Amino acid sequence: MFEFEKLTVYQKAKSFDQKVLSFVYAHPSLYKVITNQLKRASLSIPLNIAEGTGRSTKADRKHFYVIARGSAFECVAIFDILKDRKNTDEEVYNDFYKKAEELSMMLFAMMKKLSS
Image (cartoon, rainbow, N blue to C red; front, side, top):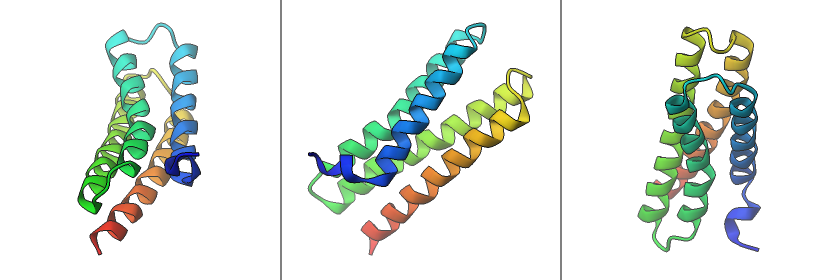
């Protein structure tokens, strides 16, 4: 088993990505550029967590966790835009927001630990 597979943040990031995919596939009329960007951003979170754990220095690991966290922010921004465009409702937005916020906090804690 790889180290990243044991991380709760990785498991939650995979779950978030799956939830994003379910949302996208349930809304086939959404603008393709937006859904493609959303799918890439959500996939980037677990992939960068995995890649970061494979790095040998703290600085390298932190760099990939920063990217993963940025991708979570990107997902929130996309859902915010979808909400403003009336492509999703407040409840769906809030659910994704909370999950992304949890990922962000977990990644921040990992980054902070690597800085000390």
